[in-house]
Amino acid sequence: MAAGQPGTTRCGGVTHRELTDSGGGFADSGKCPGRADCAVHGPHPPGMNRPEFGAKTGYSPATIASFEQGRRIPPSEFIDRADEVLGAHGILKEVKEEVARAQYPAFFRDAARLEAAAVGLHVYATKAVPGLLQTQEYARAVFTMWRPLLDEETVEQRIAARLDRQEIFARRALPTISFVIEEALLRRPLGGWPVLRGQLEQILLHGQRRNVEIQVMPTEREEHAALEGPFTLIETREGRRIAYVEAYKDSRLHTDRKVVREIEEQYGILRAQALTPRESLAFVEKLLGEA
Image (spheres, rainbow, N blue to C red):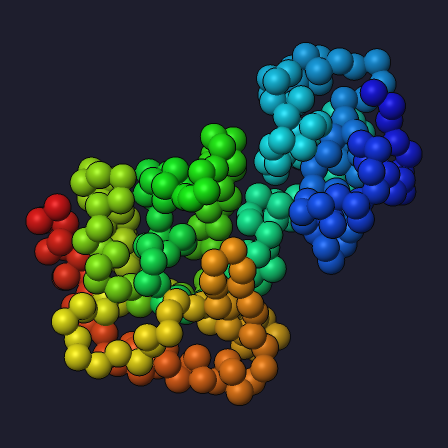
């Protein structure tokens, strides 16, 4: 395999921009999403075959081939190790965040970037337990039920990406995070009753965090301020407030203050209509006893 030179704009015979246009992601940077024959992301160097490179990085030759052929997104640990093995002097590490974003569906990548750096995050969920709260087993159930069906590699990739997002709970500067979850989601045994029990236990654990508040919106409520559907409110370090609204295979980040204010109003009233955080955790405990 021919090695590219630093600064090259071609990868695997196509330009970075061509990869972007074909759905590879990184529209804002034009960088390749992990093709290993790119000088930015690096292959095994000249004179080193896949087994040798795999032995040095801790990955199998088949996995290295998947990275090279763009079938799998390299995890951050591999990028760190490859940077050392290739003597890239930090070039690969600089693009780790952008490579990680390629794990997400195209419509979620910008929201994932904002979410990871948010100082405030407020989520209203109507379809499934919010991704930030999901267990691995629950996430697997969600992605294996996805239609059209996802292939196994994509399922594993999406699960890993979803769990990676949960690193937000371990950030040293703790963000303020709140959730309002429709009661029906906590009763639906996606993946089976054992999966639901594990998911309810995880919600209880996260609900004990000082910076996290979880509220349940009871199905029997006669008033409801957010019937238009789910959304996420994001506050950045710079004080910008953004609303993320997702639809089928599409999403939109609203920055217009009028639109964001309308959604903030919905969320504020919704929280007043839902069970309090303490009542909600007691309700989840009750459901766990029934599951």
